Picture 1 (cartoon, rainbow, N blue to C red):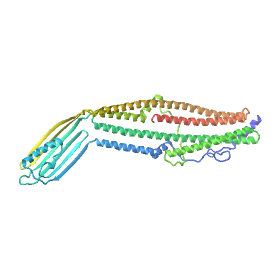
Picture 2: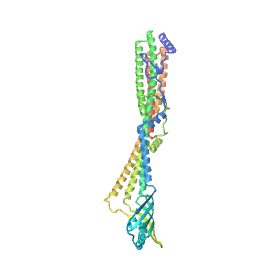
Picture 3: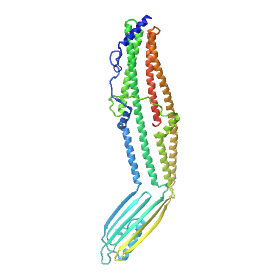
Picture 4: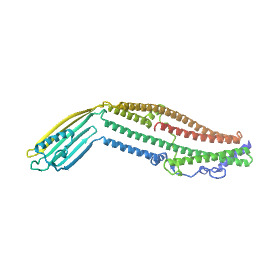
Length: 499
């Protein structure tokens, strides 16, 4: 009893005398420092994500692809929009002038031509014209066209005739039905919009995946930091205990087995520190590369609070995931695009009906001006009769593609629901294990203190103290491991939910 009291008193004096080693400068058994105790500048999760967004080459490429897709979509919109065009021409012809009667007949021909085609007769169509000028202004949309045309001609002056003429024409055309609701041009715009949305979703999906990897790397480095801190604390405790037992052994108050056990415990803790330090350096290097920094740049990551479940129930988590997962939206867009293709293929078998109309006025500039005018109205119907089944085959292919994409949507939805359920339940279990590990760590520490007290009263041996110290250290390390697993599992759940 007196022997144990003496040992306890000696240990108490050692602790009170300041035999404590700094966490950032923990000595090994040879007196050297173990682990990198330098103070590096800290970086937060938001800073890491910001740097990754601007420093990752893959993310920059994705952003550029979206810019190109947006420009292409704008180009498709412009091609199918309203267009206004104008043209003009002038010509000089050396020839014989026709008589007046022929010129007047030509004027009527010009008026009829303008009313039916929307373009004035060319200068060469009237023999003997000396000069001719013509121009037109056309306003068009994918289904409509309105053209205003004008021409003026002056013949070669002769003794027989010196009559100039002018023609003004207005024509229009309108496609009533081309087999696609709203016009086939609308299908082009709809597919262009789906393509652009698909690019945006792909960018969001890839960005989310890339940033999730960055988050995972951040958490891994944070876990390595925490682990190194714990391992240093354990090594510090084991080193202090070894130093104390060594002094007690020198007084012949502790056995050689006690000393050997303490030396093994301290050496094991020393190796753990070196291993944890190596792991941290590797995690630091990997995160630095991911955010665009030099691989040898050293920094620390800031602590983050333990995350909470992103949904209160599994059903809510699945509902959120099915509404936010970008890969699911990609299949839905592909299904819509295939459905448009099927409708377009059906349109190739449909009739096309359009209306045309026009009016033209011709004036012969003589002493007594002569006028000619014409009105026209018509319709056009076209219907494919035989195409070797090409249109039907295109319809079948598009419908089968639509069915395939819908099946993928359904199957992916089931897979996502299963994954989300798995991650949710795993995270719940890990939360319970983390709480249990925390209680076990606290209990192991209390038991260690109790065994030391019992040892002072002779009811516990020095081996009991050493064993209890190892148990406490193991419980502390286990808590850190379970805590990191919980955080990574919660991150996997968020990724599965598309958050």
